[in-house]
Amino acid sequence: MPKKYKVAIVGATGLVGRTVLKVLEEKDYFPASYTLFSSSKSANSKIEFQGTTYIIQELKETSFTNGFDYAIFCAGGEVSKKFIPIAVKYGCIVVDNSSVYRMDPTVPLVVPEVNPEAIFKHNGIIANPNCSTIQAVVPLKPLDDKYHIKRIVYSTYQAVSGAGRAGIQDLENGANGFEPQKFPYPIFNNCIPHIDVFLDDGYTKEEHKMINETRKILDKPDLPITATAVRVPVLNCHSESINIEFEDNIDLYDIKILLQNSPGILVIDDIEKNYYPLATKANGNNDVFVGRIRRDFSVKNGINLWVVADNLRKGAATNAVQILEKLIEFKGYCSD
Ligand SMILES: NC(=O)c1ccc[n+]([C@@H]2O[C@H](COP(=O)([O-])OP(=O)(O)OC[C@H]3O[C@@H](n4cnc5c(N)ncnc54)[C@H](OP(=O)(O)O)[C@@H]3O)[C@@H](O)[C@H]2O)c1
Image (cartoon, rainbow, N blue to C red; front, side, top):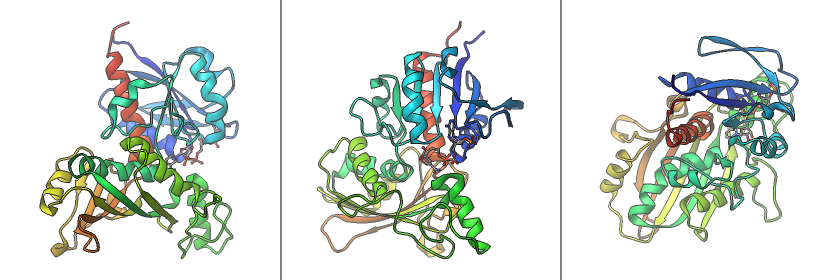
């Protein structure tokens, strides 16, 4: 009988948690048995998953004494801060979706298409990067390997689902004339250049996350990067304009082929036919969609990309499940 690993999904009732369950359900076989946790608010509610009705458990300090092998945390920073050290103490390996541990030098920050080798340097915690960062580094990595990135300019157009259930509520309520509860201004009919809190240098924390996490994942601590992160009235899927300057001479045709052949990327780029990545097309997909691949004529070796991905899937759930899969593959689909 193959061993089934005991896996906890913390925040299973949220947008990311429910997407984790969807992604797991789509797998042919995953050697795991699951326990689903939430706060007291959703505790005892039911979720259908893999043909079984699961009763949601309230997360408590004693929850991890049961000996979980793995956990995916998707319940926000405060929950991660309090409960992950407890889970790790009881021998559980955690994949965390919050930003709490991402820049900790002892915690690997992993996108499996980019730096899979980092997974196994963990001390119990592996951090899932910010959703906007994940979809950016997937195309940046092969380009950096070949042409050596010199500078990046990010401009993001981020969906309301990136702010959880409350973000979606604000857009839906705004369309009906209600005041926002989550965002500082109505998001309906608006673009808000303000995601997460403002820091002393005038940038937002979201912009800092993109800059710092990109440097850590690409292992280029001094790479010049700037970012503007904007919330837009789109339900799901983040879009990004990425301007990249390279050290080496580039060939645009070769760049398209390189991206086409890189893992996790779907190139959609035929302007004759008006083919380019769209949020409505990326919705529900695990791939990162890349298009509008063109030269930046203002510098010697620069390009612009339009990059779209499902922030709940590749930006969170899919990436976390890929990490879990690698951990389990490494341990082996072994017998008891
Ligand atoms: N949304 C995205 O695109 C995205 C992308 C990348 C990373 N993330 C990160 O993923 C995490 C979850 O985001 P989300 O968008 O899924 O948020 P969400 O839709 O608001 O869901 C939050 C989840 O956390 C649970 N929770 C809240 N307090 C808890 C507590 N004290 N103990 C146990 N569970 C608790 C909630 O349970 P109840 O049902 O009981 O309230 C719910 O299941 C956040 O750290 C976020 O930054 C989100």
